[in-house]
Length: 334
Ligand SMILES: Nc1ncnc2c1ncn2[C@@H]1O[C@H](COP(=O)(O)OP(=O)(O)OP(=O)(O)O)[C@@H](O)[C@H]1O
Ligand SMILES: [Mg+2]
Image (cartoon, rainbow, N blue to C red; front, top):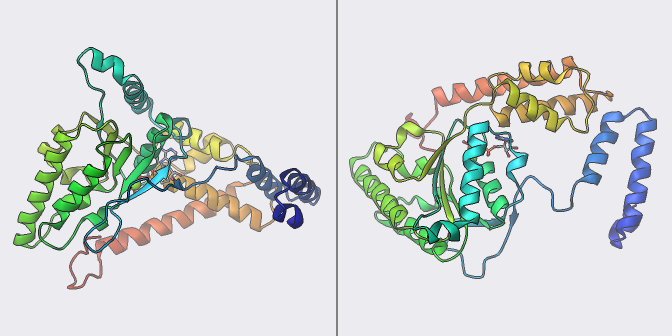
């Protein structure tokens, strides 16, 4: 098997890999065999992280040479996301407007291209932005907001401007992820003035943005954004926590190739109140527990243990946010 891999003999590699899977199944390692089969069947480009691409033009950088954006080939599509029906409809319409922008422009209309994604952590804002790029078959550029935000007066505005400038001419999906960090409340009065300036510059640039692509800003702190910000976007898309039906869909997708001795409906009930990301993490923990005890299927006990672990994790995060150990005992900004 290793020899075929080294020689790039895909057929040979697959043949031996299939034999390994059969052998694992004979040893009653069903879960492991299913997982290996899933990996073998996945398309070669498949992967959680988008694939980094190089741009023809140099990427914009801050004065100390930190890249202000990362560029990727999107690996996701909207069908892979678990989205509320009305959200999916809105996104389908936005994609259609982009695809048929010429028709709209011929009628004096513009496709929507400034979107605000709002919702709690782990509900799919970042991944759905990538999926929009995937649907449109255009590259995906994610703004490194921490690199953009500078402690030097005037620098943040300059960085935001450099990012918009880079994306002005080509068709990109440009994501200002965790956008609220641009507009973070600061204790310092001088910084507060600078902050207002940054938001004003951002809004001006957004108003002026007439590039062929889409600008998406994502936040899980909607209250930090004032009315003036909301108004500037063509669409505000909400990402709520998943309901029972959506959790069932998510669970079904995750258990496509892994055996489960509980009903999907029951699993989804146990995940109630979690975000998509938490639910996914919990299910994967349950799968790992099952594999490690040599189980044939994920059981209620695996799931309960995984849910408990998730609850502990949540409590730890919650407690550390409630009493952060900042430099002066104050809240840390990031
Ligand atoms: N709606 C969803 N459908 C399918 N998978 C999801 C969804 N939301 C989250 N996930 C899973 O959770 C992971 C993290 O989600 P994502 O980064 O998109 O969340 P987010 O809303 O951007 O969170 P944050 O506010 O913390 O940035 C994704 O990579 C995906 O595996
Ligand atoms: Mg995100």
